[in-house]
Image (cartoon, rainbow, N blue to C red; front, side):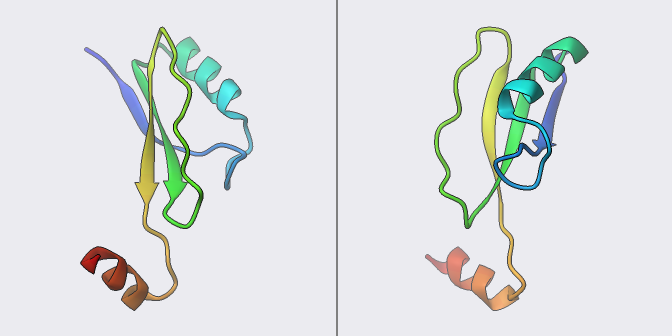
Length: 75
């Protein structure tokens, strides 16, 4: 059965490890995929491909103002 961690951070935002370190750790754990959290306020770029595991962006809506998120959802 495949296992994915779909809620990870890197040092590109609030995490402590690089993407390369996170990928290496995921492989050591035997994961099938890794979801890298990006906040909607970030410049979200495609992630590198890996031959062993799936790597995807997971977008998290983050705001101290709930009305801002409602406006984004209306677009």
